[in-house]
Structures are given as C-alpha cells and as structure tokens.
Length: 313
Image (cartoon, rainbow, N blue to C red; front, side, top):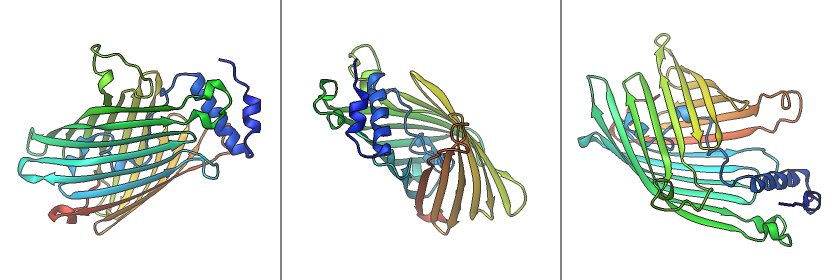
C-alpha cells in the first residue's frame, strides 16, 4: 500500500491533527482492530464493565458513569464515556444490569450496549462463586474518507455492527476476589460455522484480583491487579495499591506495563463515590519531555437497603 503521508499531513493545520492522521494511517496500514481494548485506570473501584460477576459483591443497587480523556489539547484525541447500572435480585442471590460504552479516537468510534445477568453460588460460610452472562450489540465506524477523500486508499468508510456475547466468573469472599472474564465474544468468533469477515471485533480476556487488609481501625489497604489480553496484542498488566482513611478518602497509584502510571484519589460520601485519576507515561521518551496526560473522572451512586454499607471491593 503506497501512501503519500506528507501530503496528508499538510492538509491539517495543527501538529496535533497531523499526529492523529499518522496514527490513523498506521492503524490502517497494519491490521484493523488489533489495538488493545479500552481499559480504564479506576478498575479497582468498579470492575463490572469488564466482569459483570463483580456486581454480585455489592448487595445495593448502583449507577456509575466514567469519562476518560486522553491527550488533552489535541483535537480528535481518544475520548471515552462508560455507563453501567446494577440491580440486585436478593431472593436468588443474583444481579442484573446494563453496560454502555462509547469510545472515540480521531476517525474511529466504537459503541457497545450489553445487558447482563449474574448469579452467585455459595461455596462456604463466606465464600462464593459468581457466574455472569452478557449479550448485546457492538457497532464500529471508521470514517477513513475524512483523512483524504481523493485518495482511493481511504475512499471507503467502515460501518460494521455485530451481536456480542460474553461471560464472567469470579470467586470471592468478604476480603478478596479472583476473576476471569471475556465480555466481548462476537458470534463470528465462536466457531467455524461462520466466516470471520471482520478484524474490528476481537475477543478480549481479563484476569483480575484484589484483597482488602485492615492496617488499623481507621486505615485499610487494597492492592489490585488486572491483566488484559487480546489475540495479536501484547499482554498488558495493571498493578495498583490504594490506602483508605475511614473508608471515606482513598489515595492510590496504578502502574501499567505499557509504561503508564496514574495517581488516583477517591471520596466516598454517604451513597456517592467520586474518583479522579491522572495518568502519564513513564518511558524515557516521556519523562523530561513531551508527556500528554490522561484525565479520568468517575461518579457512582448506590441505593437500596444495603447502600449504607460502604463497598470497597
């Protein structure tokens, strides 16, 4: 594929736009859809979008929103909105809810809507096995003609919509959990009966774990980890640690093995949870040089009879 990159860059007035053009070109020139699935820094406070079985850990209902903005100041930079709502079904130790994701980057946009059902099985006095199933729809749009409408390489836009299914499994007690999930398995990926005609939808697998420890009556510490894997993409691991003061103020740090780190602050007041993270690169190319951060804000509200019990896990 022969591309006149210099001419394409000249069409854009700002350096930021030129960078996005080059990234889009590289994405197109390689294999579509082999980029890492969206991940967020504050997974330790709300893992439900990645593993719906996590919703069983909270006996209260909840609604949560997350906004994430990368490369602030550059037009077309990655922007994400995430919403999830959860309703407990106490009489059968279950929960049901909805996850909605809108992820945009330059000319690309992916939108997902998934409903889920999760059921807990008691294995011991404080030990449970949670299993979840989710189903929904995924839509992918790439407006390549916006890059260079006169170039035949970019003349065709991409519009694809696929049904989606997924599952999650989590073993948990009152002080730790371990989970594995694959919330995004398109029907065309589930067997050889149909032909996989799109590389924009690939299965993603998540392995998670966390525990809560009491330092004293006022302080708690929660280490957490998240491993993300997709075919054709290097494994990415997150490691975090959060200190909680009186279960109200949380201060934490997260390190991601793709050379990113984040500082996190959370506040739990009554039934509300507010979180903010500042993520930045740690490679030698970033430290001491140009380093465009990522800002992430979360807001959650818990309701119902169990909402008075603060949930940390």
